Length: 102
Image (tube, rainbow, N blue to C red):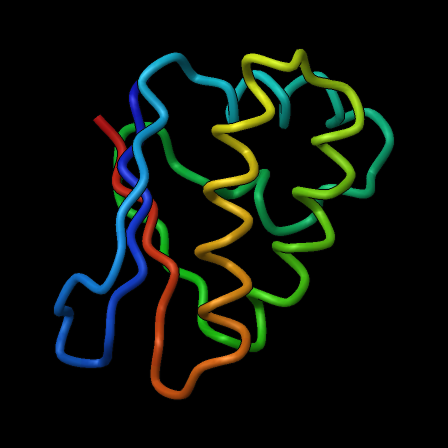
């Protein structure tokens, strides 16, 4: 399922946006689900909306780093883009990392 990942402010205005049209994130989460290290991203709903606040975004950055170790070079750019949004969310004030499913 394609995902749209957005950095939004408290009034839900889009600050930045990335697209995962090839399911890189969801495939990576599924592949890593057995190790137990992916605690937050495993809750991303491919059919609905998922939101993480700035405090959670710090952990999302760590989890994406775990996922990035096991993906191809082509897929790495998608995860890196999502990681960049998570870093901005974690370092900002009143920002949210939104995952919009299909």
